[in-house]
Amino acid sequence: MSEPWKNSEPLLANAAPTVNNRLGLNWLIGAAVVTALLWQLSGGDYILYPFTILATWFHEMAHGLMAVLLGGNFQELQIFPNGSGFAAYRFPASWDPIRRALVAAAGPMGPPIAGAALIMASRSYKTASLSLKILGISLLVSTLIWVRSLFGFIFIPLLGMIILFLGLKATRSVQAFAIQFLGVQACVSTYHQLDYLFSQTAGRLGVSDTAQIQQQLFLPYWFWGALMAVASLAILIQSLRVAYRSN
Image 1 (tube, rainbow, N blue to C red):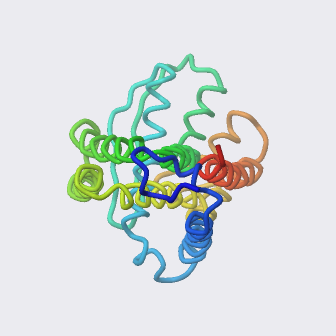
Image 2: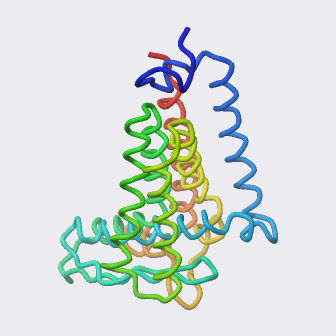
C-alpha cells in the first residue's frame, strides 16, 4: 500500500484508504466546521483575518471577471481593513437580466468555486505546487491592475508573496496541505457572509448581491441566498470526495 507524501509523484487519492489520509480528511472537515463557527462568533474575524481578506478578494474578483467574461469592463477593486470590499465594473445597457444576475451571483459563488479548484489541485504534488504559484501571482497581478484601496494595495500583495513563497520553497507535504486548507477556507467563507446572503442591503455599498438577483429574476433574495449556501456546501463536499477518491 502506498504511503502518502513519499512516492515520486503520488496522488492523494491513491493514499485515501490509509489511516493518515483518513485523519487528514477528518482534520479538514473539522477545520471547515470550526471555521464556520468562528466566523459567527465575536472575535472570530480576528483569528481568521487573513482568510477573511482572501475570501473578499475571491468574491470581488469573481464579480469583475464575470463582467469581463460576459462583455463588460472590470474597472477597480477595493478592499478595506474590516474585510469588506467592492468591485466596480461597467456593462452595456443592453445586457439581459440573465447576464446581470450572473455577475451578481459570481461574487458569493466565487470563493467556493475557487476553493473547490484548489482542493482538487491537491490530488498531485505537481498541481498543488503549481496552484499555489498561480494563486500567489494572481494576487500580485490583480494588485497592479485593479486594486485601488490603500489597504488592499498593502495586504493583497503580502498574501500573494506568502502563498507564492509556499509554492516555490515549501516541502511537497506542506504545499499539499496548504492548498487544501486554503481551498476549504474559501469554500466555508460562504458561511461568513450568511447574514449578507439573507439581506437586501449591503450597508453603504447599496443593494446586496442576492437582492440584485431578485431584481433580475424575480424570486425573493432569501431564496437565492439559501440556494447559494446549499450549493457552497455541496461544492465543498464534492471537491473533498474527488481529492480523496480511491483510484
